[in-house]
Amino acid sequence: MAVTSAPSLDRAIGPVAATLLVIGGIVGSGIFLTTGIMATSLPSPSLLLLAWISGGLFALAGALTYAEMSAMYPRAGGVYVYLREAFGPLPGFLYGWSMLLVVLSGGAAAVAVGFAEYLSYFVPTLSHSNVLFQMPIGSWTWTLSAGQVVAVSSIVILGGVNYVGVRSGSGTNAVLTAAKITGLALLPVFAIFAARVSPAWTPVVPADLPSPAVAFGVAMIAVLWANDGFYFLTYAAGEVRDPTRNLPRALTFGLLAVMAIYLTVNLAYLVALPMEELAGTRRVAEAAARALVGSSGATLVALTVVVSTLGCNAAAILAGSRLLYGMAADGLFFKAAAAIHPTYRSPHVAVLGITIWSCLLALSGSYEQLFTYVVFTSVLFSMFGGLALFRLRRTRPSVERPYRVWGFPIVPGVFALGSLCVVVNTLMERPTESLAGLGLLALGLPAYWYWKGNKGTTGTTGTTGTTGTRTR
Image 1 (tube, rainbow, N blue to C red):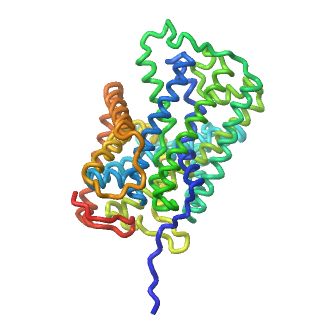
Image 2 (image 1 turned 135 degrees about the vertical axis):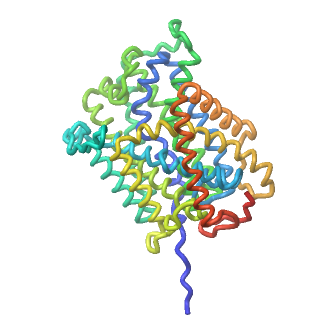
Image 3 (image 1 turned 60 degrees about the vertical axis):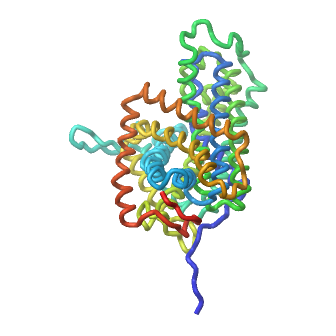
């Protein structure tokens, strides 16, 4: 009698698709919105470009750091796995808890709302101002708008795409990422042929800028947000072909590509709009395109943002479901989330879980506040992600390392130290949100004790491909 083996994840993500997943996870709405806001506190073309370069180098340091660990542990879960292997199951679980509770799902909800907002540029009745339903709940009124319906619909569609397999999910992301790169590339082309402004590169620090260091730090927050998501690929490492080779290359090349895109697009902004006009402009890409080539340019940018936000969420749902799957496979979440579809070979229950929760956050209208609360803990875990490499070098010297981070210990040190600086600054400048983020993190402790008590996390798990024995 033949024995039917259990279905496993499909290693269907090739090197090109992996690189596009890195780019797609990073490039969402940030590049279209943040430069004008940054210019309000940092009205210097030279310092603006320096901020974007610095943020890109910081993210690259993180990508190179994670690249070594991804080659060591090429399985579903990514950063969760690295923290678990370095510091034990509790830090790994708390990382996954915060990412799934708010960061990934809340981020997907926020991006979906942005998608709906830009789609209403073409179909005004689909805007958030078109209220469909209101329900009083105590002193609060829940409002359902057409924009929320569109946002939820986009999440459901992308969830369905990922449900039917990683080939479908990564393929959709690849197409959307290629499309938004093409749309973004047109902005520098417009600037070459229709530049309106000659930026004043000197003085680098304007004489009327009272606190340059503080202004630069404020601008860096927006840049780091725009560069977030470079770690999405690590969550899907269990489905990358030849992972010890392709993971480090995709992370490195993907970040370098994003740095080049961000730098050239920001140069286009600077030659399209004078600084006094750039400062405070929220939809800066649309304003720059209109200044360069007229209303047709603004329409093109709006279409690019629609594609960009949709592609970013395609990557987020693919990545988030794999993080959820990895935790469940270790017995640290509902067992059903570790199931693999027998036909599609996707973690279909995990896909459904992240899709439903993201939809609920999009409908609640409170996800933006939750997302603000957890930013502190997200950066805090980035610091521990950098420190994890140092610990693994010391405690696991015999584990095979197909890739070793270039510039060790400087590169991972910069990543960990930079994260620490952001943590300290956020704690000082936003104490309420930081403490609230820690409160949300603390809510994960009872959940961890529940799942650990029922299942336990020592030993090995064949589902995620863990080898060796974990003693912590």
